[in-house]
Image 1 (cartoon, helix red, strand yellow):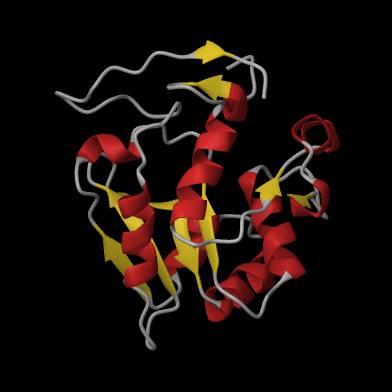
Image 2: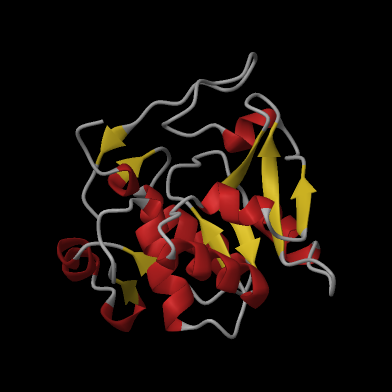
Length: 180
């Protein structure tokens, strides 16, 4: 892509700030998987999560988060879902249940679950960390092995990100770079 997705501006703020605002509306404590340069520029302090095992893309970020605090649930939100709204995140939280180890949205266009838009309970985190240690760094495979609650998004465009084509009739996205 040639630039950091977290700094793309779809509305009035860089996407990393927009996602943080959505999480705050849901009462979530916000941490960022980021580089040292991002942490310094964004003034994240102890809210920055650095890869403990770099080189595995988003799985490295999950590994860092789950290793930091494995006793609580993690609401995982990628920074590249510009149509995401607080009620979409609240649905993940509300779907928690005693027999459920993880909650994720399913993208009907691809038929795949979205590991970067999901909620991981400690049992799911443990399964991911065990698989990661064994060389399997796929968050999607880890979720599939869990007692998983799958949600359908309120509208397909919620799951459109910079990596997937827009579904028919989805609002068009435009982006510009900005400074945090």
